[in-house]
Image (cartoon, rainbow, N blue to C red; front, top):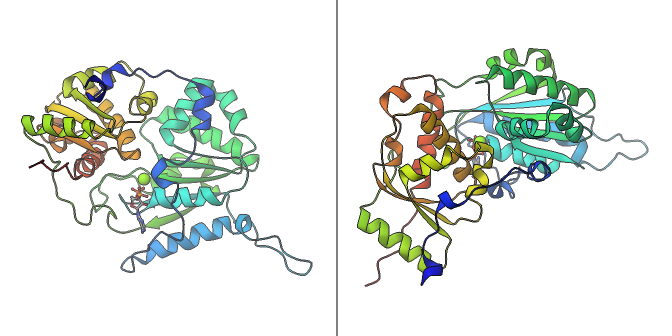
Length: 345
Ligand SMILES: Nc1ncnc2c1ncn2[C@@H]1O[C@H](COP(=O)(O)OP(=O)(O)O)[C@@H](O)[C@H]1O
Ligand SMILES: [Mg+2]
């Protein structure tokens, strides 16, 4: 039955569409139900409750009914910007999505990379025009890697804040619990200096909520088991893809990273055969960007070959992108940790 055979990611070549890009500036699917009510602050880390309180204060004038004759409604926050700084998996994106839900009218939610891609596609002036007049710009995983992008974003945020838009942002963090290598609130404020007085920063401590009980390596299976699993999943009617790892790596080089999200659109499970250790930094960075999109979409991966958690070689892990690779490794561990379909007996 041909229709049930796995499709191939390398056959999917998405195109740019600026208006669609703007319309897609909403929280990723799995954060649609993220709220302040279902954020469970860890009592061992009081800063988590503190973050919830800070988000509530930031949105108080949006969420309360207007005051009556003798009673005024809550005032807008003292500063128009909120920066959630914290380690990996403590719920920064969850809280950012919850905050976004509270904002009235036109509002946007995207990763730092999505906003830079928007500016890349529309041009600076048109991107600013598009975003102007919105109540909130939520920026997940603010990056300071590229000075040009940081400057451009700082300038854009300055214009938007001046015209009344509020900004909420989160830090971009590696998965190790101590947050080593992570840029802290002080780096963020220094880099966006002209804006820094507009931001209240909130530090969130804690453990990765998702990985309280996962192990330290991606799950890889033998080639025959791999074939059995992708065939079984496709036979159940799920949209399963199956690609040779090197084929996918080569394909990613031909598609702009802002369009990786389209490559995986509608896919339920991703199969990757014969994973190998990478030695090319550019290929590795493209894989990181691809895995980020897969992770946002919560698409499980089944793989054979070297565990995905080992694809970055020692030189990469010792270099300047160490934190990116560690974050990606953690994401790949989580993505391969799903349950495989049972054998029929
Ligand atoms: N305190 C919490 N209560 C409920 N869910 C949480 C909490 N912290 C994190 N999560 C959930 O765990 C997952 C990871 O959180 P996320 O917001 O992506 O972390 P971060 O952005 O800080 O890395 C999400 O699905 C989120 O909804
Ligand atoms: Mg996040």
